[in-house]
Length: 277
Length: 227
Image (spheres, rainbow over the protein chains, first blue to last red):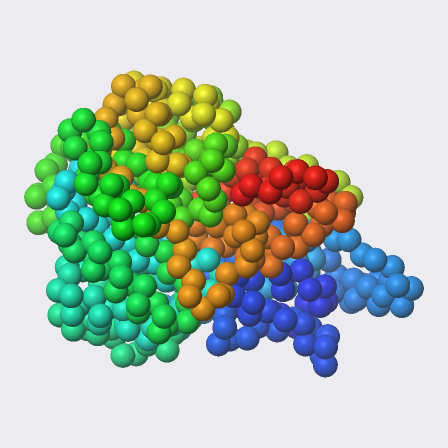
C-alpha cells in the first residue's frame, strides 16, 4: 500500500482506519506515511475508505486557512478526500501479507477467501469431525494485533510435538515445510499478517492438553489468540461431549457457530470424479 | 468467508445478533448454486436484515468518487439488490438479523427452501439451539468460541472490542471504533451514522449496525454498560 504524496493533504482520516496502526502523519513533510514493516497489506485504507477527488492544492489551501483561524473541521471520518491511497504491485514474500490479511483475496491453496478455511461450516457434508473428535481453529493476531509467521511457527512446532493432525485444506498447512516438525517455510517467517488460523484435529481426550499447550505457548509470543473448538452433535442435535467438557475445564463457551445440518450432495458429478479431474 | 465466530460479548449481549450464512462445498453441492445463493439472500431480505453480504461487498459499501456535499448530507441506504446481483461465483453469502423473531422466521423459510448447501448460524449457543428447534431441525455440528486470550495485554476495553470484533476479519480498527465512540459521546455524530461508518469497512456484510448502535449509545447518559 502506498500514499501518493502528490495527492495527500494530511487530513489524517486514514490514520484511525488502519487496523495495524501503520499510518501516521509525518509533520516534517505534512503528508501521511505508511510504516511498511507494520503494514500487513490488508487493504482497509484503500478499499474500506470512501473517496472524493478534490483538487489537492485547493484542499491544502483551505485547510491551511481554516487551521490558522482555529476552525474545527468535521469531515466524514471514513473518506479520503483526494483518493491518495493506492495499491502497489506486490511480490513474494511480501505478497503473503496481502493473501492472509485482505479478506477479499482468495487463497490459491484452498480457493477460499478470508482466512481460507471451511472449519465446521461444511461439516454436514465433509464430515471433518465426528462426535468423538474435536476440530480446533487456533487464530493468531486478530483482533487488531497482528502476528509474524515466526511466532505461528512456535505454536505449530509445539502442536506437532503433541502428534496432532493438521487440517489438509488450510492455508497454514500448505506453508508447512515439514509437517511432522511443524516447520514453516523459511522465506516467510519474518512477514507480518493481520491474522491466520492453524487448524488441527484430535480425539476428544486430547482437548485439555491441546488447550493448555496453546495458552502456554501464547505466553511466549506477543500476540492474541482466539480458539474455536468444534465437534459433531449427536443424532438428537445435542452436544453431550465437548460442551460439558469445556465447562468442566472452566472455559467460557457461550458463543458458537452452529451448522444446521442442511447440506447434502446435490451435484450430478460425484466428488470422487471431481477430485480426479 | 465470514468469520463470525469470535465476537466479544456476553451471551446476553447477543440477543440482537444473529448471523445466518450459506456455504456451498466444491464438488458436493456447488453445481448451479448461483441462483440458489441468490434465492437464499432474497429470503433473508424479506425478514428485515440489518446487513447482508456476498463475500465481496456488504449492503453498505464504501463509495468512491463522492461529491464534496457528502460532508453535509450523506444518505446511508442499505442496498440489498447489489448484494444479491453481486453473487457471481460459488462462495459464502450471509445475512445479519437483530431480532430473534426475524432470525427464526428466516431460518424456517430457509429450511423449507431446501437449497442443499450448508447453512450455519452464529450467535449464542442457546439462540441457535432455539432457532433449530422452532425450525424443526437438529443441529449437526457446533464450533464454540473460547474468546480471546491476551496474556500480553494488547487488547483495548470491552466497548471497543465489542465494536471492532463484529468484523471477523479485523477491518474495523480499534482506533476507528474509539473515534466513533468519542464522536458520539461528544455529540458530533449520531450513533446511527457512527454505526454505519463502521459497517462500511466490513466487506463481507456481517457487521451488525443495530448492535453497534446500541453499544455506541451505552456510554451516553446513565445507561448500564453491557456489551
